[in-house]
Image (cartoon, rainbow, N blue to C red; front, side):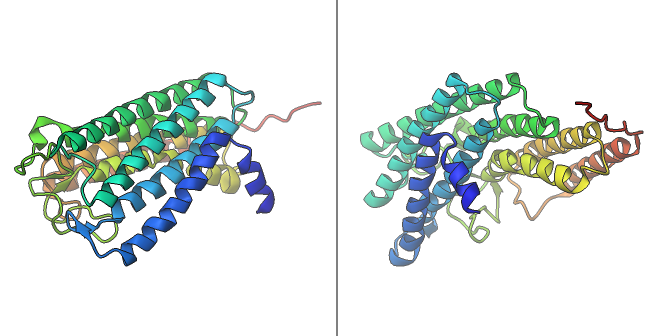
Length: 309
């Protein structure tokens, strides 16, 4: 464990420093939830910065690890990683600053200052998405010895970008709030801040665009984890080509699920109260995924070629 932590400390250093700082911030926010009685849009005022801190810490750690997989350093990818650190710091500074001021950070155009800060956050997210895309292209262009891992990393990076795009409907004109000065919303069909699921706060009375956004973002961890499990526990039973194909099937299903959850939310439907149309779509996805995985597993496997020194 100590060796692993020491190795991790030498991954993309600005990113790992950022992760360390954001982890400390997460602890502060967790304390704030219990120490600060203020409530904002139906939730403890420190819950949003806590969720963002945890998400950015996980995102930064995963990106730094992915960059460490490259057989040689890429200055372009490292600069893109440093840019992500910079805009991530801007994002968290604004979120925490607005909490200290007792107001919201997202969709807030109630005053010139709030409008400017919200606009700066939008610019930061755009820059982060572009830098993420650059890292994805660099990773795909560089050879990685583990083909299963390479496909998982590539798909994870791409689907995470899809998760970022899934947040765009939150700021479209159709999401204009009835509250003056609020220029977007997480929820569809109901006001933000209503009844929600524990911890995450996703609406239980209407659609919630954060669900597809959340699922898409965490493809960055889910698919590499699947590759690690396939290699570790099925590496001797399934050849590399089969494991690669299983990762591709999982990635395709994951992307469709992200879009399906966003589609469900746009129809104003709570996650846990799907209608027949949504259930049919989920069932179709499940059957298609199981069928594709079955086809992959029943194809003849190639014997692993022994390397001769």
